[in-house]
Image 1 (cartoon, rainbow, N blue to C red):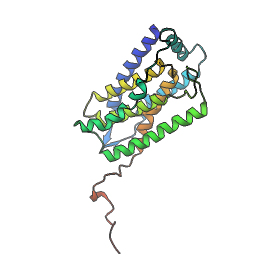
Image 2: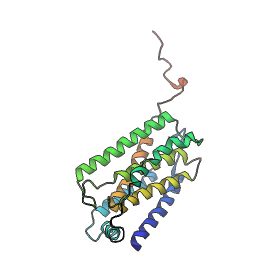
Image 3: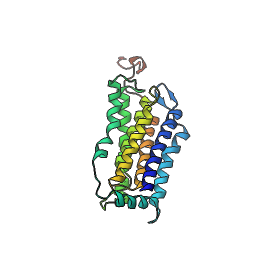
Image 4: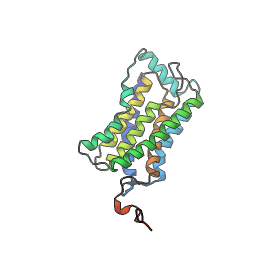
Length: 232
């Protein structure tokens, strides 16, 4: 149990540090998130860690945590994580309604959200169906964790949209996302490898949506094609 508690505490501490890293890494010009190689360090690191943990034998950390869970939390089950994974997406629009200023207008924000989630959840689906890994409880399609990928994608977008003007947002967003990841293991639905890879995938997918977005929605008329509507 001590090892499990230590992991939980470490995950929470890591997410706090990561929130600060996100804040320091954002380079925004006219609402655009510019690509920087250092923005890849955390998500790629999480994904690589997940792959390494998944490839270990029975003495690996992922199985050790499952054994600790079964010894001390056998029979524990709740559905908090099923609903909490969507909270960042509610906050993305809810914070604006509450008076907080987002980085991106709602049209472009919605387009980015849709692109990021198509990439994120599409990759989750492909990987699950391709790898056919079994969950700790014996059911199918374990790797990667879709709940974790989903909530970390939302936390990333929430941090980008509101983190510049509201410094506390990344900390709360990633702490909440980490809690969902831990809950997936507590509920015996995923190994630590599934959660680590899912977290990295969610972060990277949403960042990629920002990096590639052209911000064509909701442009002022003066920025549109001046020749549109002219009859020759």
